[in-house]
Structures are given as structure tokens and as C-alpha cells.
Image (cartoon, rainbow, N blue to C red; front, side, top):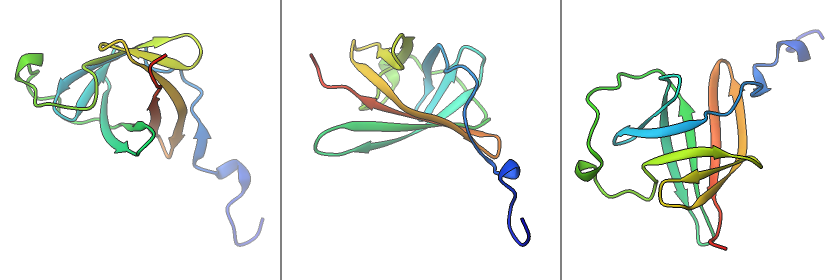
Length: 117
């Protein structure tokens, strides 16, 4: 292709790696997975759902905080991967994996809280 980017050079890919098995809150706005990778959350609440964009970025973890010392949050303290492209949270809620992609080496995963059955 002249004057453009060849398709094989596209920086966007569907993430082929496995989804994190667990994500634990480390301190406000920092989650850590089982491979010690840090994930930063951005929440989006609408009338019908709660979504969180988790971006895997290496940041200083700092000191861990006890759950009792964390400020109130709409997000759970922990997610555990379940079958069917979803997570179960520490508060027993379920979250579906909307997408998990990698762009220029940065992973983004969007989770959406499912309504209670």
C-alpha cells in the first residue's frame, strides 16, 4: 500500500493472551493480577449498567492497603475468572468480558457488571 499503513503493521490486535485469572485491589485505582502486572481502572456508570475499562500499565505499586482502609468504591475488591468469558467478584456479582484487546503493546479489558439473576 502506498502512502498508508499495511494491514500487517496495524498496531491493534485482539488480545491472544489469557485473561487474568485474578485481579486484586492493591490500593485505590490500582489492581494487580497473578503475574504481578498492574491494571488501572476507569469506571463508566450508565442508567442500565456499570462498566470498567482496565488498562494494563506498569506503575509503581506502592504500599498495599487493607480493605477496611480503602475508600468506598463501585468496584469489587477482587475478580476471579469464570467460564463463559466472565468474572465473579468478591461481592458475588458477575461481570462479562466485553473485550480484551492490545494496542501498541498496551492491554485494555472492558468488563460489564451483569444484572443480578
